[in-house]
Image (tube, rainbow, N blue to C red):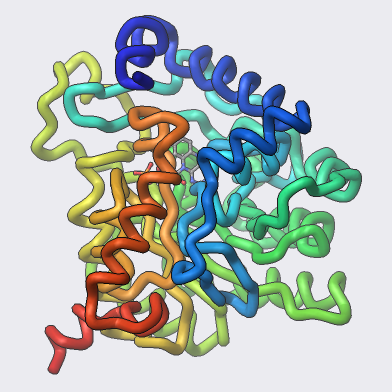
Length: 367
Ligand SMILES: Cc1cc2nc3c(=O)[nH]c(=O)nc-3n(C[C@H](O)[C@H](O)[C@H](O)COP(=O)(O)O)c2cc1C
């Protein structure tokens, strides 16, 4: 049904316009109590066996919405209504910014993929903090806050910009993510080098501890799939050294191998997401788990299209999993299908709990 609707309607619209339209419907539906109760019952049924504890937080399940969809924290309840167990808002930058000129989002339908060069279009840390402060939650959902660098801030002053966002946003975050992996802010990904990453993460940790008392805000870093394997290992080691809570693997890729879509599309600059990212994201996750084991919470994202993909990430070492691009192609039943399939897979597996399944395949391969 959604697929037909997508073909007849959304696929003929500019992708960013389609996003805004769908987003408006989700927000509207979430504002009408009867409708949201009905939709949540239909789209977000709970599966007891999927209850997850991660980052010191309790969640209904492991599957959440990846950053970039709700950049400004305007639709948290709407996304929870659609069955996402956690919603990662952002990327939010220190200062508001318009992002790159349009057109900046492209659908590669033949590849079940997207290319985006949005460039962190967002309302900025002050406005988003105010919105989160004023929010009266309808659904109990975990809210992650993903922060990045304001484009006009020079790379050398990046830490101060992240600290500004942290000071404003950490108190509203169930967990905080330092995004150093978007390909659309010049120089951002250089911050993944450990010489830059160490002082940055240390400064953000200190800012979070200074501004939030009474609890420790979990801190994660989100990395690119384009890192060389040695660099993945280096980030993993640094995360352990600094006592980081988690690593999110992965952001979008600048690679363009094996795509079926026309060159006019695949040649667009930006980050590629969706199905073609699956293999490398899984590989990075496996590598991370082999390195850090259970010491750090791993979040698997990149090309998760269905329950089987999510299950494979869990077996590879992810405690949490996220999706974005497949939501565009699969529609409002996406999260529901992932949950249902995950519960079935867990029940048919030798593992008594989801936690037991985390990393099982990677451990087996190492034995
Ligand atoms: C249009 C678009 C915008 C995105 N914006 C952000 C962002 O602001 N911050 C971020 O950390 N990741 C962003 N991402 C990356 C996603 O969070 C995710 O890591 C990536 O798309 C891989 O997952 P997927 O294959 O399920 O889409 C964006 C992705 C897309 C498609």
